[in-house]
Each structure stands twice: as C-alpha cells, then as structure tokens.
Length: 253
Image (tube, rainbow, N blue to C red; front, side, top):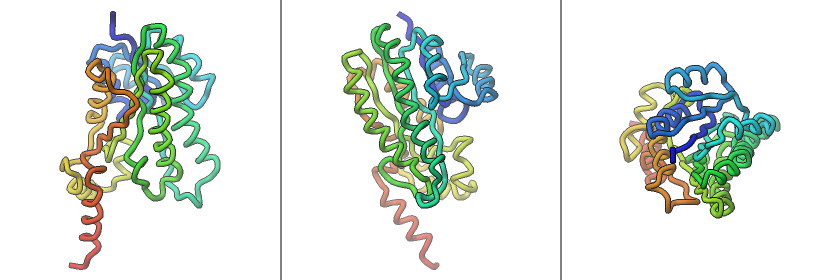
C-alpha cells in the first residue's frame, strides 16, 4: 500500500513549506493548502506537489478538500495567524479570526478528512501548537490561548479518533526563524542574543519542526498519540536562563 496523501495547511511558506518538502521526501503525495495562491505556485514548482487555495476557517472552502485527497493518510494542521496587540486593545474581529483559524480550522479539517482516512484504514494528524501555550508572550492577543486550546484539542482528537485507526499529536515549536517571524525577533544581533539563551545554542529552523512532524506521522510513532512534543531548543526546560539573561542585560555595567 502506498503511503497515501499528506494534506498540509498553511503550506505557502515557513514551517508549512518545510513540512511539504519533508513529507514529499518521505514518499507521500502532498496536497499543499493555503489562502495565498502565489505562494502555493512556488511550493508546487519547488516541491512538485499538488496545491489548492483553501481558507481553513470557511466550512465551504474546507468541504472540497476530501474530494481533492481521496487517499489522505496524514493531516498537518499548520495554518494559523498571529495578532500582535495586547488584550485590552484587541478588536473583536481579530479575536474571532484567531479562534476561527487557529482552533476551529483544525476541527473543520478533521471533519473533512477523518472519514477519508478511516476508509483508508487509518492515519495520523499533527496539530501545530506553540511554546506560548505554556509561557504566555505579552502583546499577542489570544494567540497563546488558541495554542493552549490546541493542546487540549489534540487530546480530544486522540480519544475520539482512536477507534478509527487515527493517531493525533501536536508539535509545539519554539523560536523558529521563518519569513513570517524574522521581523518579530528583531535584528541579527538580537536573534543571536536569543540563541545564546537556548540550550541548543541556536534558534530553530523550519526543518527542525518538519523533522518532528515526519516522525510523528511515521510507523516509528505508532504507539504515540495524544501528546504535545515541544521542539524548542530547550526553552521549556530552562526558562530560567531567559530570566537570568534578561536580568544581566538590565543591570548597569
């Protein structure tokens, strides 16, 4: 039996694109989904995968995915947005968009593809969480809250889909440099300063996250479900280093 189709949302750049590249190398047929048609053209050209413009927050848009992936065996729920504003000034529209895309989107995708995966004999779902799900970052509106919800949603999916032969896990990235985050982490010197506080000694790369997702989709992870894997260079194990570094930078020389 072939490995089937891996469906990846938010596939136009960054982590999503790296996941498409890795799963294609693993032998899956990849269906890359994004709202950005131009970005998908680049992915299709460079990765050699099929693409479709899909808004994961729109039930009608998601409904067509099952027909596009009749051999779906893997779903990677990567699509998400961030809003950089504090809670007191967050607009209702922004907060609803965060919930619609970051939480409801993965549920809609599962509703579309779990029946397909079940008919095929099972499969694997990987949701994208974040280190902010356990360490809130200021001025990020409800983004950390949505990622904490993903951790619980992952457990819910693992429980509800187990009898369908479908495993569900999450990967929680740390400070990963992508096209979308590079500006947020500041100058190159600022990024180097962040890297020195991590046990791994460097910031993350999209391929680091793609490698973890590849493992969770593989047969080597067949006894793993309902888990959140933090791929963060050691951040969650040593948050104290951040506090010590911040105190050192704040103290006069």
